[in-house]
Length: 332
Image (cartoon, rainbow, N blue to C red):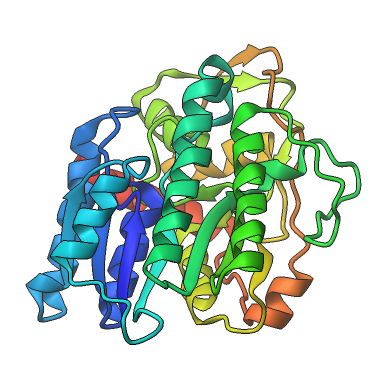
């Protein structure tokens, strides 16, 4: 199958690309190389994908396109260059849409930019899928759509969704767009609500990567609140496994799945486990709570386990050990 993978140079998408290549798919990676963080890190991610394509025996199985998902002309050029045809029924293509402006706190500073990139970008991609009869559309949503919901664990069947950041609202808007297109056209839209993904290549602005770097250097780490907040952390390999299963899903035209680990870890626990993995103490810079942050997240994984046969396998401590090992090798 040919896979149009958006956000290809990013953390989650670069791992996904490697997994798709290992399965024998051809990956057309699209990314606008937004300088939200160091572009050198994105280039490293792309080199890792190219290396995997080479080791699979077909260096031409990965194609990188620098372009923006909000630009229909860019997408039409991809269709032309890769001979995406529609005359003979549904296209043997799928879309894995992982591109987005990310981050809760930055979205509060730039809500209009987040709306354009995330919602308009998804709309343009759905139109592209409709025009070219691409049936399978896998979308990276977020646990942030649940907002501050006291009914934990959070279930996909709970429709009391109250996002509290522009970023979260864009993800929920995209889910609703997916429902519209799945209702009107022969498109299967699968939304995956990711719960705090971490692992090698994680973005440098995210807490675990930032904490590992600062603790290793002996610098203070910013800790918001008293450390009692908790997250349902998901290791990157498990998340990629969920994406691959979503590509195979054929039951409903529209569906939503949690991709979490259903084992919440408090902020204090997270710091302690990183300290132990690094063998160094953290210097805490205690700060107030941040607007837009959800105090606790916890996924109900019942539906995902039963329908997608998805079972996260990586305990948090093991995932941190793998990430610290990667960090040390990366910086050596």
